[in-house]
Amino acid sequence: MALSALGWQAVYRVLATDPGVAVERCFPDKLGGSGDGPPAVHESHSPLSSFPVIAWSVTFEEDYLLIPRTLQAAGVPPLAAERPSLPLVIAGGPIAFLNPAPIARFIDLFWVGEADDTFPDLFSELRDHLYAGGTKDEFLDKVKDRPGIYVPGRTSGKVKRLLDGRHGPLHDPAFSCFISGRATFRDTLLLEINRGCPYGCRFCAAGYIYRPPRHARIEELKEIVEHTDPPKVGLVGTALTDWPDLLPFLKWLNERKKKFSLSSMRADGVTDELLKFLRQCGVRTVTLALEGASERLRRMMSKKLDPEDFLNAVRLCARYGVNHLKVYMIVGWPGETDGDYEELREFLERMVAIRAEEPGGRKKQYMRITVAASTLVPKPFTPFQWAPMASEEEIDRRFKILEKMMKPIKGVTFQHDSPFQARLQGVLARGGEELADFILLAAEHGGWKKALKHWDGDPSAIIDRERDKDDPFPWDMIDIGVKREYLYREWLCAKQSRTSAKCPSKDCSECRMCGMDEL
Image (cartoon, rainbow, N blue to C red; front, top):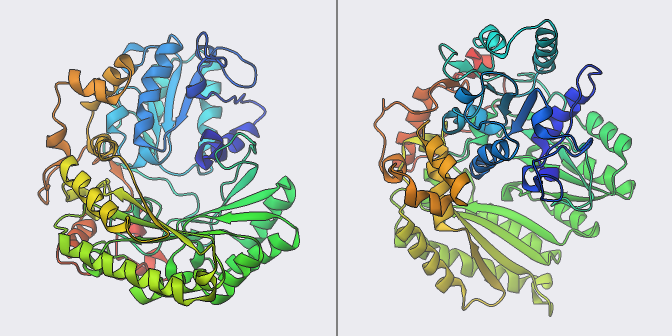
C-alpha cells in the first residue's frame, strides 16, 4: 500500500533533490526488513534510530497504531515528553490538518497543510541548527509559531493550513516516485489530476481541507509521463470528469500505447464519447458513486446528482459492454429510515432493467454490478462533524437488509465494510489527546479490539451524541480556511435535506462564501 500512496512520495521527491539532505525510506509493516531485529531503512539498511529526523506521512486513522509500535521497535521512546533529544519526530499528511490531537503526544512537530516552498527550507534550517550545536528544544521553540507548524504544547493560537499555490492551476501535482510490481497498483504511475473538489458533499473531508479545488495542467502531466515512461498510468483525483482536459489526455496516453485507469467518476460526467473511448481502450470496470440510498439522503449530503444522470451512466456502461460496474454507497446517515432503502430497491430494479435493455446487457456475459457500502464516519472540518455515528447494531442491521435485498437479483453482488472498523475510525478521527493511551494499549496488546478491553475511556462519548453548535472540538487548533459558521450552516441544511450550491468557478477572494479568502 505504501508504494501506492502519493503524499509521502511528493515530499520524498522534494527533499531528495537537496544534496544536503539524505532521505531514506522505512516501511513500518516490514520492521527490520526480514522481520527480525529493529526497523531499518530500505536503502542503506541503517537502523531507523540512527536518523536525526523520523518523518511520517499519515493518511488513515488506523495507521496511528504504527507510530508507537515502530518507535518502540526502534528503541525510541514513543512519547514526545520522553524524548528530550533527537530524533525529531515529524508528522504530515491529511491527518495533520484534520485532527492531529490523537497522536499529538507522540509527535514533536506537525506540518499542517501542503508541502509548499517553505517545506524543504525547514529541513535545511534544522540541519544548520544542529551543525551549529543547537538543541532539539531550541529548534522547536524557534519554529513553534510559524505558519503551517504545530508543536504540541508550545504553539500558541490557531495554525493556518498551508496551500501550495492557492489560485490558478495545481502547482507541482503529485506523482509516483517509485513504480513496482509489488505495489497495490502494480507497475502504475499514479498521477494527481486535481486536488480538492467543488461539489462540497457534506460528508467528504477532501472537499473542505483541500479547498480551493485546482486542476493540473495537461502540459505538465505530459512531461511527467514522458520523463518516467511507465507501462501504465493511474489517474487520481476527487473530480476527474470535471477536468476539461480528461479526454484529450486519455487520447494522448492511448496514442503512446500507455494503459491507464481512473478512480471513481461522477455519473453526470460520464458521456457517450468518454465511455465509447474507454471501452475501445480496453477499460472493463467503471466505478460510480451513488452514495445515498434515496434522493432525500442525497440532498442531505448535498450530493448534487440527478438520479437520471446516474441511470444514464448505467445505460452507457451497458451499451458499450462494460464488464463490471461498481457502485459506491454510504449507510448510517442521521435520521435514515427503512423507507430510504425501499427507494434504493426501486432504483436498483431500474438499473437492472436498463442493463437488460441495452445490447451489451443482453450478452451471455452481461455487465456485473457490485454495490459496495461503507459506513458514514462524521469527519472533522465537514458539516457532519456535529453529527452522531450510527451504532454498530444499527449498521449491521442495515447491511443485512441490503444483503437480503440484493441476493435475489442476478448479476448483482453486495459488499460492505466492518461496522466495528467504521466505529473505530470514528473514535480515532474525532477523539482528543486522551486517545494516546488507547493507541499505546493497542500497540502493546496486539490490536484495537484487545486495547478496548483495557482502555478506561468511553468511545460512546466521542461518537454517539450530536454536538452543540459551540462545543469545542479537539481539532480546534487547526484553521483550514473554511469558517466554522459556514460548516454549521451546512449542518443545519443537512438536517433539513437541503442542497447547497457548489463552489463557483471564480477566485476565492471574490467568492468569500466559506472564508477561504482569509487564508
